[in-house]
Every structure is written in C-alpha cells, then in structure tokens.
Image 1 (tube, rainbow, N blue to C red):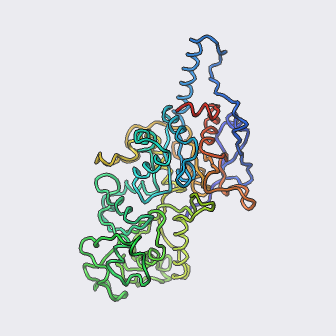
Image 2: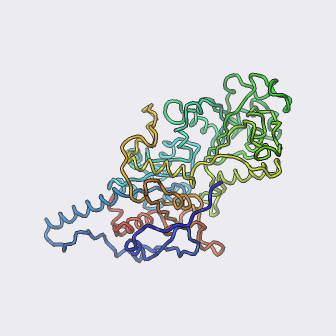
Image 3: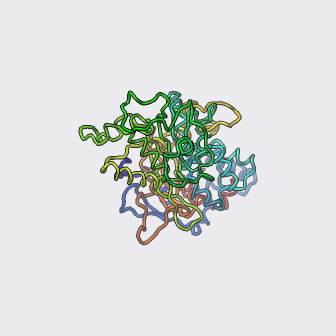
Length: 477
C-alpha cells in the first residue's frame, strides 16, 4: 500500500516565494494554493544581482550581460527539472505551445532536466521519437533535447539481476507484442529472455478463454511457448505437485506494462496464475483459503510475483474527459480478486510515480547529469550503467512539473532524498486535474498551480531569483 502523504514544512526562502506573490505548504489541506497569472507579471525582467548601477557604455553592457549569464548558469547548475510528458508537454497529438523553445532554451543554458513518465510498453527511444514528432523537431534537435532523458514507469527494471531476467514472465500492456520486443532487448535494455504474452497462451490452449477473442487484431500475433513448454498438459487442477508434467508451463513473474487492452483475458489469466501452485498454469494451490496462513493462504504457495508499471487511475487525451489508465485495470483486478477470495488482499508490486523508488531513480539520473547514461543508443550495444555510476553533481532543488496530483504532486511532495535535495511539485492545468466545484483544490497540494509548462518553469526560475518574461525565456533558445 502507498502511505498517506505526510504534512511537512517548506524550505523555500520567503523572498523567493514573494516573487510569486503566494505562500504554500506541502501536504496541508488548509493551505491556500497560489494560482499564478503571468499576464500580470510580464513587466518583470531579469536583473543581475551585481550590486552596481547599469551603464549605457557598450563595454559595460557586455560585461553586465556576461555577468548575468554567469549568474543564471550558476543558479541553473544547482537546480533540476523533472517533466511529466502526457498532459504537460502535449495533449493527444499536439504539443503544448512553447514547449520546443522551452526545452531548447533550457538545453542551451545547460540546465539539468529529465522526462519522468508513468507511460510505458515501449522503448525509451521510441517514446523520445514520439515526443519529438509531436513537437515537430528534426532528428538532430530530438537527439539534443529529448533522447537519453526519458524515464518510463518500467525503466528501473533494467537494473534487475540477470537471474531475474532469465525467469519466465507473462507480460501484458498497451501493445503486447511491442512489450515483448521491449522485454527481449537482450543486449542493451531490459534483457528478459523468456517472455510470454496472453496471445501466446490463447494460441497454445484455446480452452483458456471460452469467449470470442480479438483474434484478428489484438491477439493476431503470437509465438510458440519457449523451451517446448505446454499450456494444456495439466488436466486436473488439484493434481499433486509430484504428478505435474516436466513440460508444464510455469510462470515466475507477471508484468503489467501500461494500459492492458483486453481486460477480460488478462484478468482471467492473472487470476489463474495467482491461485495456482507455484505458477503452474492450470493448477490450484491447496493453501488457498487456509486461515492459519498469512492472507488466509492466498498467494502463499510460490505463485508468480505480480508487478504493475504504474497505478495512474486516469490519463489525459484529446477527449474532454479523462481516460482510464493502468490503475483502473488494477482496481478492476482487485475487485475480482476480492470476490473470488472473500476479501483477501491482492499482493503486488507497483512501479512508477508516486513511489519513492521511481523518484530515487530519477534523482540519481539528475545527479549524474549525463543524458547518455539514462538510455543508450540502440545501435551502441552497450548496457546502461547503474544509477549510482559515474560522477555525481549535487542539487539544491528539483522542480517536478506534472498534471496529476495523485502521482506527480504526491510523489514529489513525499520524496525526501537522503542528500537533502528539495523536490518541489508544480501542477499545470493542461492535463488530468481540473478545478471543479466538487474539487476546488487537488487532494495533494502543489507549491503552485499554473496554466502550462512554460509558466511552471517561469515560476520555478522566479523562485530562484531569475525573473523573466515569457518572451525573454523563449529567447534562451
């Protein structure tokens, strides 16, 4: 279970909060949330903190400009940005206005930034290409601004041990054949060697699911089960463990990689494996319902571990209403599991935001300040190093810019890295959250609510003493 958000005080200096004309307190429901109107702030310009009068002399102006740039670079060297993607950088197929210039400007100033998404089911490079397409970036610009900075919900799985990657895993998600290909990237990224999809199982045993299937679309692609394993040799679910045929299919892990498409098939298969004896498909554990055991015996007999890439209930598309995400699938699975087991807990491991493990991974990437360490080029055939490899540079503050209070804002608010860096959540209005009469304020409180990602960066820079107009920020590009 994810712990409730903790109430905590802010470490932001009052002088910096004054620039936004607002006060805030993370986690306090009674706090007044600042809503920044940057139209009223566009008269503000950056003033170098030099302590001397400006001069009309050209040489003095050049020196002042150089000092200003050095001051900006010094500040940017101490902070970082973590951008959510869907609902922050784009909606549907359209980029939020100003985002290409924003990223180009931050890149030119050598600011540290990453893209921290609960999306998944694809390679990080493919996600980078998709983001670049929405922003109408050339390949050169995409490689400079985006490639190597993407962290998806399942990216931390790359650091799993080789022993785990040798296990047999059932994987499902938005595009199950693509998910298999991601997991099978042997030489560079994930490295799972025995990957099975629901489509494979439906082909191997037609009786697994008795209803009409999406054979000609979703389940059209399938492969033979690895190692000569069979999904149909067990005919008695209560057979003794000693009588299980040696070629019977056994699943070690179940990986839900982002927004499953055929919920009915997936819930059926996950149920079958979680009630099985040690992951043998077609068996039923004798320990199920044993009140003397933890969780009344459910999931206590070596069943596969269930991993979920994220628990986002909603995500934002071009549709005016939010669409269900992976979290909705998990809630549906929980409901079925509770009905089957008489209320037993569904035991699973979650990844993605708002979990600490995901934010810790992202934090280490920012400390490394080397985009190439986040994900390697597909042609390089190199294994990405662990998050703690390389030379780290400390950070004073990281601004998490997101659209979902339940994942982006909650995660950044609760994350307290051991090195003392402060993560500051900023909520934008372009995504999941909408202010309504029923929900005038988000349940998890951000530092500030702004209209879009450009205004979020302007607020963050203002909080650091760099007061810019939108136009001036765009000139950084």
